[in-house]
Each structure stands twice: as structure tokens, then as C-alpha cells.
Image (tube, rainbow, N blue to C red; front, side, top):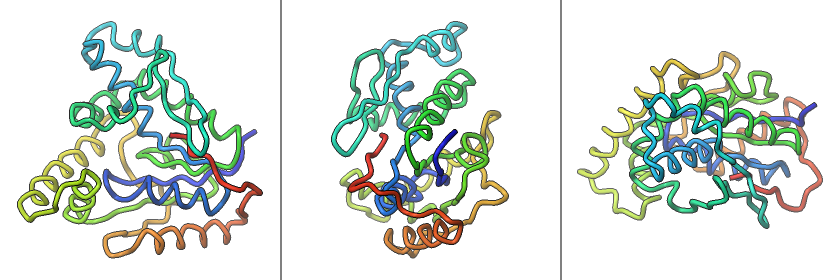
Length: 234
């Protein structure tokens, strides 16, 4: 048995994690950014020099001890007892995570941990295949989109960089390449589930997007749980 799930999918920098976290708080649910699991595996592979096309790569991945460790208000990912922290968002991890996450063993390992999270309490989970593969029976499915340039601007601001025209153009090219890789991979490609509600966040505030999601939850019978503050799983 599992608790209610709100699945939020979409391309990189479409606002998934920020939206999911705030929606989870509004519902008293837990929040899980599934991408952190893929980043954690990618980080460890880089640390140990594992090539994702090497014959023993999948065996190495299956042997990892991955834990979601609860802390006040959050839950961090550890791998073999190591906490990568901010290193999960380092450029070298970002450059490799799409390729690593396309490996079958990586997706199977991550899938196990994500589904286990829904056994604990109501869950708002964001990623790229949550509504299609991980929780195809989720009570609410949302697919967030935004223009490549707006996503680029947001990504630069998150990194603390001024969103100049040149840097926005450069980052938009990188994001489009990531979109192509995520959408054309063989395993669990990025796509909108047929029953997902698409929300274009290009000109919307986070509060407006969260408001739409909470209305969807209310309309589908999902009510806030009695929790003072939802823990974030990742």
C-alpha cells in the first residue's frame, strides 16, 4: 500500500523541484527530487572512475549502498556512507547525469528508492518519468514546460550568474541538447503522460503554478495531511 502521489515531470529548469517542494509543504506531504538519486550515482561513478559503458558498470551500480538520510526538514542522499552535498550539482555531474541515467541498472536502483518513499507518507515527486514510469497510477500528474530561454535565465540565476543575453543563449543551447538526450533515450524517455496536465510556467510565478497544482489535488480528492511541516526527501 502507498500514500497519495503527486507526480511532477518536465524538462530541465522548468521549475519542477521548487514547485514540488512548495506544493508538498502546502499538502503536508513529503517531497522527493528523484534527480538527486541519479546525480548521486553519477557523482560516485566519477569519483571512482567508472565508465558508464564499461562491462562492470551495472554490477558496480547495483552494489552501491544508497540511503535517503532524514534530517530536520529534509533528507539527504548518501552513497556508500559518503554525503556528496553540493557536489551533486557540480558541472561535471550535470554534464554526465543524462548519459548515466540512461543505463538500465541506474534507473532500476533509483526506481526502488523512489517507490519506497511513497510507502511512508503522501508524496510530491518530481523528475522526468515520474508520471509515466515510476508512478503511472499517481493520483495527480503534472507536466511543466517553459521556453528554453526562460529556463536558461532561471538556471543562470540559480547558479548566481547574471543572465546576460550571451549567457542565456549559450545556456539555452545546452538545455535544448539535454532535452533531446532525455527525450530520445531508450529507457524511460522524457514525455508527458497522456493523463498529465501540462502547465506552461514561462510567464507564471511559482505561487501561481503551485496554486494550480493544489486546485488539481483538491478537485481529485487529495486533502492536506496533518503535518506541521513536510520533510523533503532530497
